[in-house]
Length: 296
Image 1 (tube, helix red, strand yellow):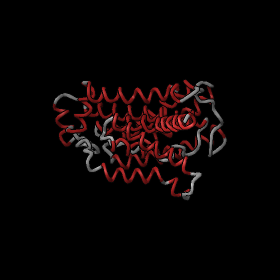
Image 2: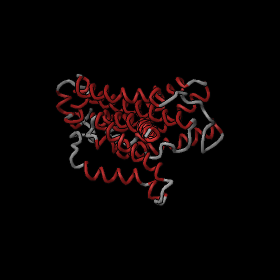
Image 3: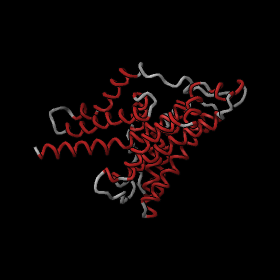
Image 4: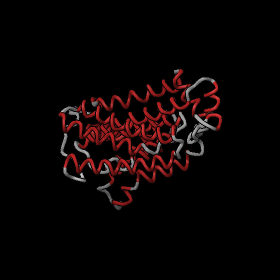
């Protein structure tokens, strides 16, 4: 009985550890999309954050500096996405995909310049803690859920942000600066995605090429399943993390490896098929706002 309890605790701790990047990124996505900007660039923001964290800690020896460089990198990518979609009115889907490709190439180039390799960085110390419960990035993820829920649904800022995603013209007429609100939502999503990338780099004690491995897209799916709601997004993230842990535990079983490795993605498709029709997106998400049809 004791061994079963220990196994369950380890299983639960592993779920929480894997859920951290999903939770941070999906909560951030809620802010971006509630403001009206589709954020497929989450993958690139996470990857930039992971690279910034690895490079920052490698050259300074400080995890705090690594987090600072992660945030700077993620915010730079988020600003680019906001500029292209909010200021230049470009297609938000195309911008997100293009930015992901750009960041993949840029981090690969950065690896070759800074570490002399196109595959991985030098080993970094990460954040040494006895368990995930003591990890400051885990605590940041936990805080982001409740703070995000309160900010979005309990503050004037959250009301203004949601207004820009529901009806930008009405929000503008009420004196809300639509562009500024949308920029803020994208930048918040970039900061949280960058922290998610930093967590990945610290956990793996290095940066490896393409290490986010589609987590940004899964986080976006979690946000949709969670109905553009930080608490709902976090719960969906836990579900996907559970599937990923189950994949690890099943790899030594009788199922073919290819089936086991595809489990998180299969679950994503099935859950989206079941929930996306019931989840109502912000009315003008993905729609650039052109003030008076002439200028913003």
